[in-house]
Amino acid sequence: MSETDLTFEIEKDFQFEAAHYFGHADANDLFKKIHGHSFKGTVRIEGNAQEEKGWIRDLWKIEQIIGQVIEPLDHAMLNDIPGLEQPALEQIAQWIFTRLEPQLPGLTSVEVGRPSCGERARVRKT
Image 1 (cartoon, rainbow, N blue to C red):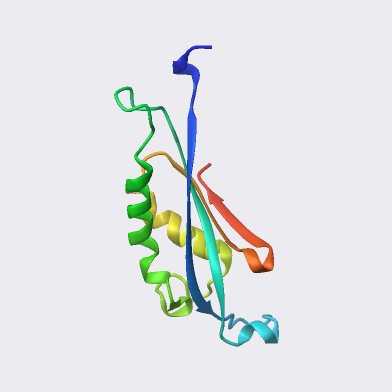
Image 2 (image 1 turned 120 degrees about the horizontal axis):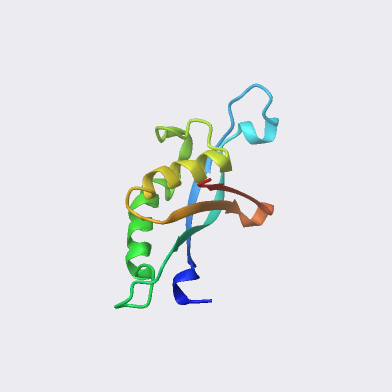
């Protein structure tokens, strides 16, 4: 196997704190109330290592880009953010993915979870 046959994957974790509620008719009464979570997530990028650097992309720069994208979510009411009126984990992951994709070539997935609940959702490019 030659180096040209290899594809690398890198991941960068992120986290934010936010509140939300579910307003749809069949939502559990408990979750219709405003409540908050510590959200954690992971961004995955695939690609070939840059010959002169040996990496796909600078992880520090990826961290900066992710930080800019998730900044509006941190300590926010997610329902008030356009596109997150129904802020299920799937919708949060998609919202982040959509904003990261133009800035992170090779982005393949974004995962968002609520570790205290043991829940997570992932959106990925097919």
